[in-house]
Picture 1 (cartoon, rainbow, N blue to C red):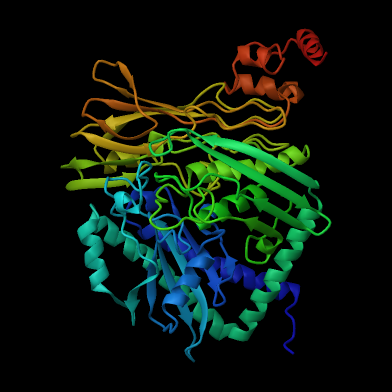
Picture 2 (picture 1 turned 60 degrees about the vertical axis):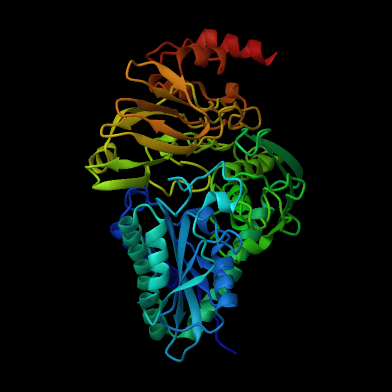
Length: 586
């Protein structure tokens, strides 16, 4: 029987593997051609075992990889049972473990010197253009995958013996509007996966493949033990929460999301039932199975108070009940999942966190702000500056983080699915790369949900083209149904969007649109605020004073919502405040 690794060996090997995934990510960040990769960092690099178990996610975006990387590797093995060194596979099918078609994923099997498949390196990179019928990777109004138009690759061999499959390359170059940009991103993502392959081969030769197998088994056991301890500290019981996505084309009545959650600390299990939800809809908002499960796990891992590794070991303590042809379940081809990583996924993950909060104060979270507002939409057009057509997703303005039990929101989290892993764009870089001007960008006072802990503020952003017309594709949830607070906390501010014409007049835009912005006009974007946690009158007076000084909260809101009488410089009238709060508690 092989000797067990001790704690020091486990820690060292974990850090060695983390560093390999970090090298992959650094490669992708520095070599990606499109701004969505080299500025916004919308990508993930992970390691999966040969048995298709998620081992390490490093600093990846959770919606990309908590579930799905393992399923994609399983699809690779089912479609290609004889894996060889030098193989690589392109995968973006939402019906076979992918998140949504815009996330091109490169799978590289790590095959040892004896021809044995040991691990799989996974590099997932969001595309600026994936061949959709309109120039955006978020086609919210797509009736089905045919109307959506994206090229779908269910674990297709893209390299053999380290040589590109030129047939597939030509297909992509003919369908994608910015082929040179796509080619650069292809080389970056595949190069990242090859870096991981090289480093894992070196590590296996150094420490031995049997040692790495023992490490994986013990690391899963250790992670599961940490998850068991974390769940045993959570409140026991059942809770049901509801959320509602705004009406969109194909979902004219909106989309209700219901979460039935049970926490059983005695046997250290969390169980989620999503079967009582609507069937898939004729739009692009349906979730892939990977995004459904990742969203549930996000709500859970955001709510536990222990530092638990996210891998196949810790995931064993969560049981989910899904059904086929469900908007938050398992889609059936040709259902469109174009927007699966965000909108409804956010409603689901936020609902899980709020369900946990309902079971006990000090647990769970409020709702993070909904997306995708125009300020993080996909811009497209043609100009001399770009030498022809351009397509790119910008990340110019988001806010609206969720309040926790004891801490205010993380302002730059973006949305629950990327957990702060993506960066917001530099205005100067966007203006340098594209024919656009950013008129302004700032947080909005009083837009975060009030509470004992305060939700994150919404963001105002205004921009427009300076050379030719520009299209801005976006799918902005939260115009009607605000991100929810919890345990007495207030909701965040609603989203909105306008076109400002050359005379300065505002014209409201639809929440789901491919908006045409003429040269000389601008698009005005308001993102959502995040929900608050707990009774606002429980917020310490000195924190409210600070909020007013920093202009997060107005003097009027401090008095009316928080029960704190304060002037604009933050000086508190203690007597008036005590009287006001005493009156509200009776």
